[in-house]
Length: 298
Image 1 (cartoon, rainbow, N blue to C red):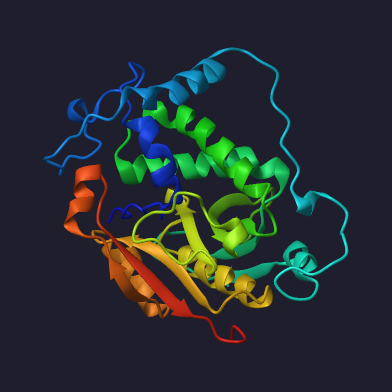
Image 2: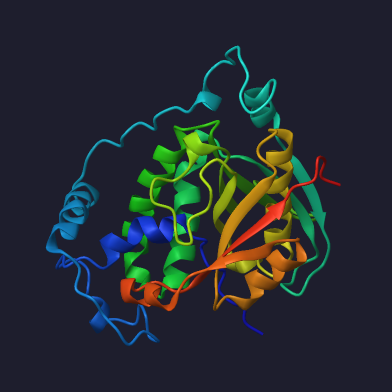
């Protein structure tokens, strides 16, 4: 039985959509592709949308010296002061969750998953995983994945500069009984307060001052092993340790039954739903879901 696609909730979808559906000759128009095979209404977006994509395409296609990754506060020596509670930055530096995974329907003999904040040298691999997940969920042709990875890398690098108000978690999986480096299995982005809130969040818009989970992705070959469940729990544990506001928010597309069931089992409830007019912007309807975090994660 095939693994259902894991959608990319949902910040990147809003960020990258103007590039995908621009009038640039480098990308096909929505009417000539299968990006939205179930969408009957197609809008032509303003031509100025193409300009940022053309600039990025020129940078992407021309040989150049790799740009250095701007360091985040986590790359620097500890600095005094408090954030989201005493010693908040150090809590983020030290955060690790290790889970032993048993045999699941995805095959294999089980293994070990370690979830922690992303390091600077892991930016390329994380961007590639997000780009592949975005392309799968949005039905973007595979030939555009390298370009998507380039755009996603810029996005993730900019978000990472806002640490500790934003953090990107990554999970590395090692099969039981194997040797060598663990493989990147999953990632998620968390904005922890208003300073880390995305400037253009998906609708329905969550409260800026509350923590928000988005851009969750699990490598396709490693699905059906509860990695997504453990990633979600790790996000909640980090927010609890960082002493954020207790109500956490996330989005889930209405059509995505498997993630919706997982969020419900984790205690999330729908607080608002997109209206049907959101289809006019070539977007799927979404639930805004919320959960009140306990004082301690069990």
